[in-house]
Image (cartoon, rainbow, N blue to C red; front, side, top):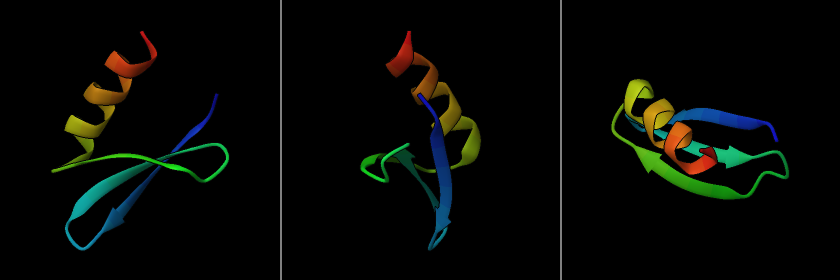
Length: 40
């Protein structure tokens, strides 16, 4: 599955390959760490 990270008003929002919102994070590093936990 592919994921998209978008910078929105100073934070990162993560979406799945269908464009559905999954979660937000304070920065890209945190988003990638949370995403790694989600798909593990």
